[in-house]
Image (cartoon, rainbow, N blue to C red; front, side, top):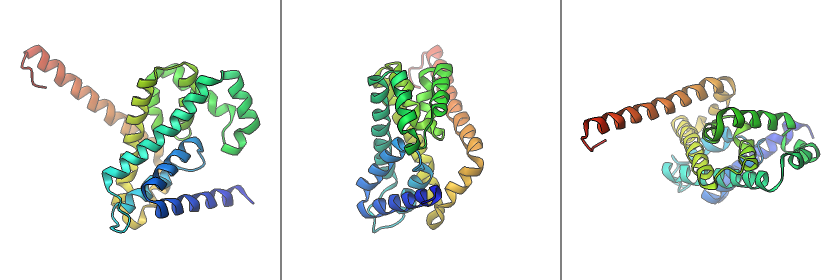
Length: 221
């Protein structure tokens, strides 16, 4: 069977478990797309967004975001644990032997390691927006034995933001939720850059407001 046919079958299966199992299916799908990158979040999350519009699914916008975030964090913790348990050499051996089944390679690990070394722990948050990196960035964090609480928090914030954006997009498009994947396939670098700038802008504004309030001793920020 060709790779494209396999991936198509996987996507069909993901749709089926979400439609059939509801929230547990969504949590399982987001967990699997974190540990198995060939399952794209660009498929899972917009579908969940569309399902929030349907009364027969029981999905709500907030519920879908929470469940998908929990699934993504659980998957990230698996990779974090693996990175903390094995050293880099042993992990590379695992990638050489079994990485092809997950469409992962040592090159992908090198990219994640480079990101982590250059940007530090903050990349655990921003990396959740990047294809493939969103999964493997947890491994260098495990290698470095990053504080588990910070890792979980940054992962939850990044995964929550990504879930919010894609679920909202799927909700806005309704039955044409599948167009989200096509759009991101073409413009994902632009979308990611805008999201990162938006987050940094929000943090800067909040920081300026906080420091201004502190200087003026108003006590309300």
